Amino acid sequence: MTSKHDSGVQLMDRALLDAVRAQAEASPRRRMHHNFHLGPEENPNRLLNVLIRGTYIAPHQHLSPPKHEAFLVLEGEVAFFIFDDEGQVAATHRLGMDPRRPELSPGIDLAPGVWHTLAALTPHATCYEVKPGPYVPANDKSFAAWAPREGDPGAAAYLAKLLDSFQTAE
Image 1 (spheres, one colour):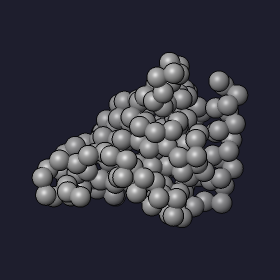
Image 2 (cartoon, rainbow, N blue to C red; image 1 turned 135 degrees about the vertical axis):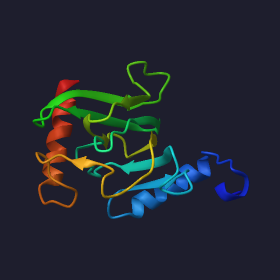
Image 3 (cartoon, rainbow, N blue to C red; image 1 turned 180 degrees about the horizontal axis):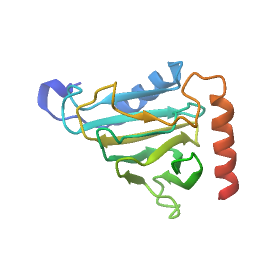
Image 4 (cartoon, rainbow, N blue to C red; image 1 turned 30 degrees about the vertical axis):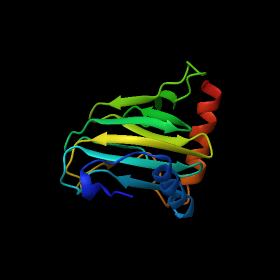
C-alpha cells in the first residue's frame, strides 16, 4: 500500500474507511479521524472523521481565528445541529449520501462563528471535513458555555435530548 508520503496521492478506499471505522469503534471517544494533511500547519486541513453512534461532540464554533468548515458525509447519516448564541437549536439537517433518498443533503458548509455539532444517526457515519489550517488546539474552536463538554456527566443526556428534538422536528 502506498502511503501519503510516498506519492502525494491518497485514496479514500474501502480499506482506509474500514480501518478508521475500526479505530473509532475501539476508541473510548467513539470516533476517530484520519488526516490527509501532512501536519497541523498545512492549509487547508483535510480529514476523515468517523463517528460511532453515541459519540458526543460538544457544540462549538470557529470564530477566533475565523474559519469556514465543510462536511461531506461519505457513509451513513448524521444529524447536524445549528444553534443560536443562547443555545437554542436554530436549524437541523439530516446529512448523508443515498441517491434513493433525495431528501438527504450530502454535506454542509459553515461560515465562521456558526455554533454547531453533529451526531451519527446510523451505527457509524464517515465524514470528510475541510477547514483552514493551521490547526492550533488552543484556538481551533470555542466551546459553547450553554452545553456540556465532552466527558461531562450531563453530556449523554444532552445528546439524547438533541436527538429526540431532531426526530420530533422531522
